[in-house]
Length: 489
Image (cartoon, rainbow, N blue to C red):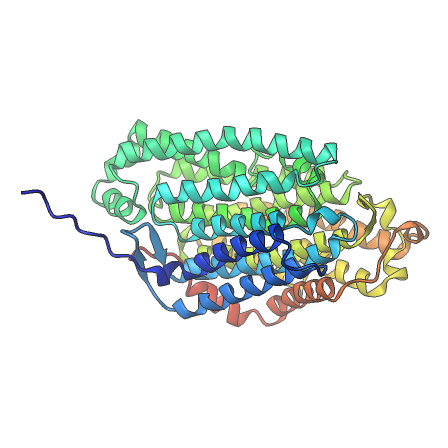
């Protein structure tokens, strides 16, 4: 008699946002292929409607704490908060892209919006992954989509070079990550993160085994590439500069959010009992990442490269939270990722607004006098720069405050001192952008500034408002972040 086959429980409600996003991506492709709409921005509006609807469905699962698909999916506050952040990033990117089409008409295609959504689906599954297999598949879905988007300027050699460089480096880093997962499986006998947590608690001696430690190091290497952690950061400035500006903002925020979600899921919970030597390794990595990013950013004339090195420095600030560990640090990381999404998308959105046919304005000299000629645009850019520098009362200040407070409570006082010093260093290059916009004449008259579309006006307005709300009224979002920390079920 053959054994009875038992179909595992399937709960599609747990992945309803991802399903809706995927259906939207397929719908946009079909509409574009069959030419069902002819109006400009129609594809963007369809995409935006689908993403907004998927975002609203996230709230139907608020407060749930359960697993689905045999533990592959974790439905909890942590996944909710990060999925909300990723959906906001996607919405802002779509809004900015609708204006960017004036300079690069090829952006207005079904493939572009479909790839954006599939990348976001990969990020979303990384945030909700309860198994290393799903985590790897989600990372590959995100990465492949981003590789293509980086090279979306098919006639621009710099864009093609950036895509090729990102693909080659990404594939190399992914091999380390996959090998690390294999070693972790060999040491613990499971790919399930919750089961791995229980195994490590029951068998603490595994923390000292060579197989396990090798797996941790290789996993950290693979994820370190995605978050631009020193010494795995060298690809960042070239790829950020060569990619379309709207994609640079998308990958700078979304990829970082997804990668830190994986770091928290793996390192801050199952591997939270690692020996002190590993904490010191991350301590050194955080200091190097902050310092290298800020020091090199000081001498950049390209704003995109400056923001790329700034992104490296911000990865260092977020690593302080990983080093600190604990639920308070987790909440600080979540809050900081939300703030970082608003201020980075906003800064790259301003860059995307300026340009001419097939050309982007990028250097500091081209921004001279911009704040006087276009006051509203200058004010928005100033808000984004102040927040990136961590100057009150912006959200960037509160994000750093929460992470630094968690690190101090965990005893990492010197790490916080070095983080604060790095924040002071960063003020110079952020304020330099504001000085050029308001205190240097000429230059702005050469910048083609088309009438901003309602979409980008809304996008930049939402980003600026989000930064100020998170800075002036942080309580609600901080409580939400505290209630969203990952605690094994």
